[in-house]
Each structure stands twice: as structure tokens, then as C-alpha cells.
Length: 357
Ligand SMILES: Cc1cc2nc3c(=O)[nH]c(=O)nc-3n(C[C@H](O)[C@H](O)[C@H](O)COP(=O)(O)O)c2cc1C
Image 1 (cartoon, rainbow, N blue to C red):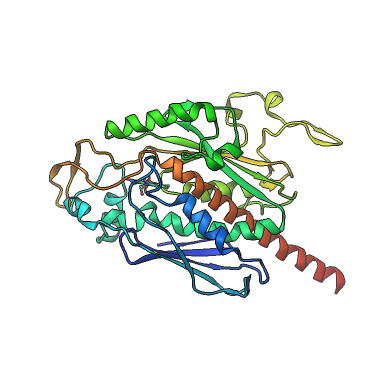
Image 2: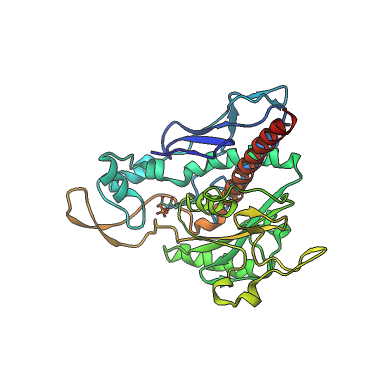
């Protein structure tokens, strides 16, 4: 398996949904960065399950233990290891699907690829793993803070109901990270109804990265936009990413080009990236999540012996994964930008060395 992400700011996650712990080892963090443990706890708390009726009722405190890489409140340049112990597993809920493949989940592919699968809560394929990414993202954000770069995200669409009113400040305190105070109530009703109906909805998240310098991104195969897209699609249940104006494919060049004046760009349809390199505008992307696959309706499937069966699921699940997914989107965005900054720094230093030789 591939469990690491990034070139210089590089993290590796470990652990399963119902194992002893999950965690992350983050390498490539420069020495001397202010390590804000409270911020780390807070970031994990934003993603944590069991907080309200809009998330799975699995109740984890997601308290992180920082094992290494930090001394007297600063990073030391050595790997930062963070572990989160699982406390609220209910593995019995999954005994009835031990030999059965849940439609829409990773059971089928994990079984046929590895021949063995930890069926408890989805094992390694569970989005429990995304808590470890959020921990890595929190550390990335500590680096970005030094550069004045800010990352924010929120829910822009649920079940086909969409807003264009992007209030990122409001989203920060919304129980469903809604970007629109007006539509939030409607979305909450939809979520409640989905839950009552034992069903789920898909949704979309908008990401904005502010104050990026011009020049981040490494053409041709480590472009800012292609790495961002890849990072986002690596998040469980993400099926699509749009960089910049999500209507671009329907427009003409004249409608979609960002004209340039002495003061800068006159619009930002490009979403802050041109030729894979940041152009100094806000980086904007939209990330599309499919509906939660685990629903409580009878569905057709097969067991490991190929017999047709009816699946009736138990357990605790998110009615809409895009909600908590929004926090994961921010985290992955932060990790990509931190990595791009480190790549850029290395190149700059190399260039200077040559000049002064
Ligand atoms: C934050 C988050 C929470 C999720 N919670 C659940 C859940 O409670 N139940 C579920 O079946 N899938 C959940 N998922 C989605 C599955 O992990 C995912 O659909 C599954 O691993 C199959 O992978 P794929 O959809 O990327 O193909 C969640 C995803 C995210 C990002």
C-alpha cells in the first residue's frame, strides 16, 4: 500500500478504524516552528465524530499524543509523531458483514486485492484515517501561519441544493460547516430526513487558500493544481475536483479568461493557478463527495463465496460525509501548500548557492 503523501513535507499515516490507535509521522517540518498543541487539539475536535446529530454517533475524543519532534514548544526538525488512541469501537456491529461486501464501500476491492480484510468499521479503508490527516494538516497550518497563508473551507452543496453565498466566517462555527446561513436550515432538515429515511446524500465543499505567493507549484508533474486534485481525491468518498470557476467548461475563452491590469488580475476564474503555478490570487477549488455508502436499507450483494445475499447494515455512520469531509479538505490543502513551499525553498537555496559560488 501507499500510505505517505508529499515530497518534502511528507506524512505517513497508520492505523485502522477498530484497531488500537491511528496516527501520523510527519517528516520535513523545518526546525523552530511554533508548535501550538491547543490548535492541534482544536483542529481534531472540528473533525471528531459524535459531536452532533449531523455526524456519526461514534463518540471519540480524538485526543492527540505528540510523541516526538517537539521541544520546549518548538519543532526540532526531526519527525513529528502523533498518535490518537481509538476508544469507542463497537466491532460487534460489523460481525454480520464479516463475509459480505457492502455496496459502495471498499470491502469488495480490499478482499479481492489482499485476500484478507479487517471488516471492523472498514479497517484501513475507513475515514477514521482522516483524523491522522487532520493532525498533519494542523502541523502544516502552523508552517503556513509563518507565511501568512490562510486556508478555509465549507459546504457549498448538499443533495443538489447549492448556494453561491460563500460566508467562510459563518462556516467556521456552523455545526455542518455551511457556507450559507440561509440554506443551512434547509440542509439540516434534509439531513434529518435522510437519517429518518435510513438514506444518505452527496455534497460539495468549497476550498479557499489566501495569501499565497506567486510561484508555488512544480510543472510539469507536480503542479499546484494537479497535486491539489490528487490530494483531494485521496480523501474517502471524493469523486471530483474543480479548480477555479466551476462553469468554465460551459463558457467561451472571452468569458473565462482573467484579464490583467497594472494592479493585477481583474477576475479569478483560474482559481489562482496558471500553468500549475500559483499566480498570487486566492486558490479556489470545489470538491465533490459521493453519498455515504453505509445506509440502513436492504440492498443486494454477494458474500466471499459468491452467494447472493441481502445486506442489512448496523453501526454508526455519517449521513453526509461532505460535512466532516470539509475539515479534511482544509487539512489536505494545507499539506499540499506546505509541501510546495518547502519545494520552492529548496530550489531557491540551490539557485543562490550557484550564484554566490
Ligand atoms: C469524513 C468522512 C467520514 C465518512 N464516514 C463514513 C461513514 O460513516 N460510513 C461510510 O460508509 N462511509 C463513510 N465515509 C466514506 C467511506 O470511507 C468511503 O466511501 C469508502 O471508504 C469507499 O471509498 P470511496 O468512496 O472513496 O470509493 C466517510 C468519508 C469521509 C471523508
